[in-house]
Length: 72
Image 1 (cartoon, rainbow, N blue to C red):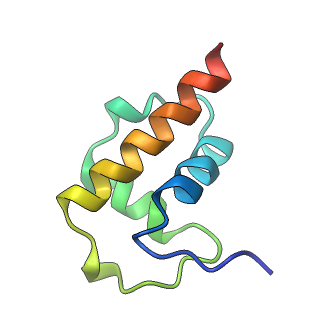
Image 2: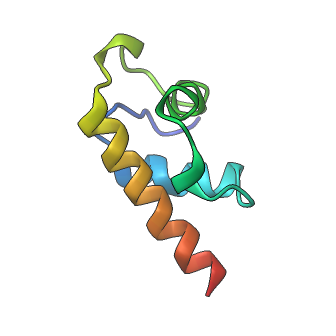
């Protein structure tokens, strides 16, 4: 069973997004699409309306760190 994820799990969400979308540069993803990607992850259990710009930005930056690591 997948780990339960909430909006506060930016590091783990970033890792999972990198695994699911390895060819996407996270800095090119609109927040509306990022929101959809997150709520579609297996194990995501949080209220979809509890996201905000700062949480999405933290997720995007965590994903970007994973993206950069994978490229090097």
